[in-house]
Length: 346
Image (cartoon, rainbow, N blue to C red; front, side, top):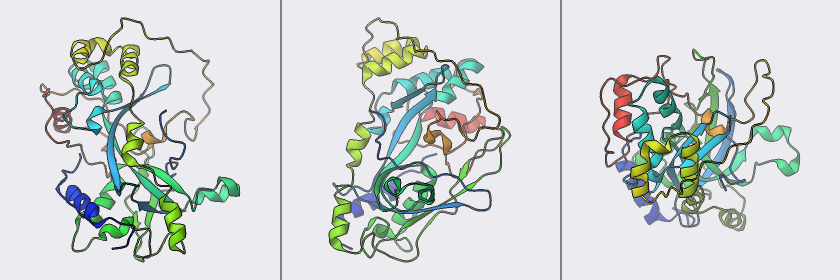
């Protein structure tokens, strides 16, 4: 194992991923733009190397709530369960309560429910979007932060946990023993709503080893640019007063006010500040992508609202158990059984 990889930390991380139960200001300017989709037959191909952070950590999962308000602005709140699954999260609690309500409540619950991402340091080897950029705007050969979906994390986890056939620490090694990750992004066929989703299923690690630079000095320089993953996630946190304001604006605060106050979310009795209303632009025919749509919401289809038949459980389990996300959901939306399992984990 090369000098850039801490063997003890990797062994611990390998054990963590092996034992882990499969999971059913805002962002940094250095975040790598979400890879664009190719067609159903011809993928867009990206290539890079995952690298350990300054403390030797490889990548990390975080949970968040992100939804669009009626005025079309976007809300983001880092879920407290990112740091400890037993932590109280007012939005997770509100989601539980909304799922017990009428159809409109259930629809809102699906919008605000907890989502997950993974984040790590990513050295961009090849980005096809560079072809349309000026030299000073190209990202190939630069270090970025990559917030990637569970669909891709499963590819990494397989190599980490398979001690016999997996590539192990090689997938994070910047030296000559390291391996690039090749992201191949196809498009799914249109779902019943006419939406097309990215398909990462053909992504894989390179069969050949290579260094990310032609000298140790250059590799060291790249490694010094790596971002502390814990610090990055902590910077995504939303202050409690802001969370209260957001929940008031969404008419969610009254649902969980008493319990939230007991958890340190103070209500000063003020009304949420009204958002400035801007005239909506006329809709274009067949728009390519809405300009204000965050890339995070482009990784997987949104579940359709469906009222549970049975009473959901209120207490979270000790471990998260989110539904698999490797393939788009069937057109008929979540089943009652899937929904109840998810509610039990809130």
